[in-house]
Structures are given as structure tokens and as C-alpha cells.
Image (cartoon, rainbow, N blue to C red; front, side, top):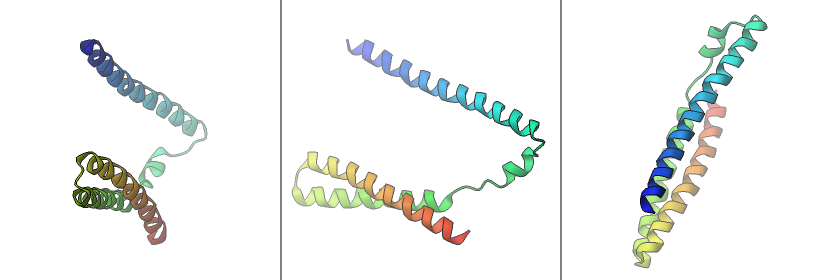
Length: 110
């Protein structure tokens, strides 16, 4: 039974990855055709894109702070199960908080 579950998991993973890649290519070509019909220059539109370094940095910082704080709180409680749950939940919480702060900082400095 475990082999079937492992096989289904890998099939679902590769199926999801293939589907995401396929739909990305499909909609990207439709988008380019729409821009070509409107006589828009695609090079000007692609040059305006920038990487959200503030969002990436603050979310990474938030995840790190969440893991460290979850470790220390779990260490004080002396419960390994609580430590794992706290590390996961606090890293998600502080990561989301980092995304919000990074978005606000990026919006402010642009």
C-alpha cells in the first residue's frame, strides 16, 4: 500500500508541475498575441518588471525570526511536539508579516 501511495504522490507532483508549465506557456502565447493585435511593443513591457527584493528579504527575515522564536519558546516548554508546531506556525506568521512590511517598503521607496 505504501508503494502505491508513493507512486501516486510522485505522479501528482509531476502532473502538477507539467500542468503549471503547460498553462504558463499557453497563456503567455495568448497574451503576446493580444499585445501584437494591439500593436504594443513587448520589449517595453518586459523591461518595466523589477524583482521585489524588499518582499523577498523581509519575508526571509520573518521566516527566520519565526523559526528562532518558535525554537526558544518550544525549548522553554520542553516539549518537542510543541516546538515543531510553534516553529512552523510562527515562521508562517512572521513570514506573512514580512511580506506585508516588504510590500509597504517597496511601495514607499518607488
